[in-house]
Image 1 (tube, helix red, strand yellow):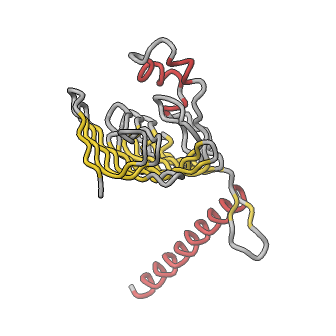
Image 2 (cartoon, one colour):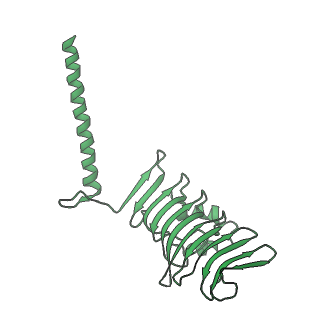
Image 3 (cartoon, one colour):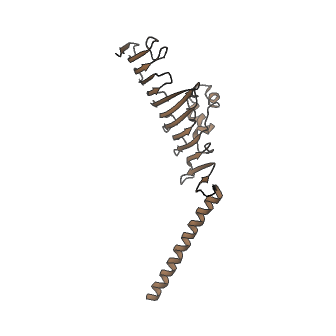
Length: 232
């Protein structure tokens, strides 16, 4: 019996060595096949990476730029036409053709292919229109591909704006905290019927109630009534 146990133990040890060798071979194959190792450094160079789920759907895409993924909804014209063009007007698909979908970074997709988390440079255009300038940042989207929150550094005519904002379900801003290059800074809150601004803006800023330098709070309701609370 002892001899049989020892024989079995030797066979198990051989099997462990075989499995370890197979795993090591697989790792070496991956490194040699998909990347180039820098001399004297442990660096793998690749153009892109796509992670699929058990059903073969692309769920994570990484690259510079992001590699094409057939499951990505925002680049699927048929899916955009059936999901977004309806109700957006006859010119929507023509406008869609001008949207930028390319970026350098990482995008996490849901099972239907919509971008859900995007950390990239530049940030792709939202599905409702073009951005006013290139942006670097982080986006959180809903299950219809609409931006629901974002944090970014936006370049408008070579002037940098820092903006943090959660959005409504129609893609429009619900709130925004912004710092502008002219020194204006503020918090803007917008509901269906009311809006509030609190902050400091320079002259001619669109949130200044009198087109002059303004520090304070402004409130607007659905009747058009405006309340101005100036700061000291």
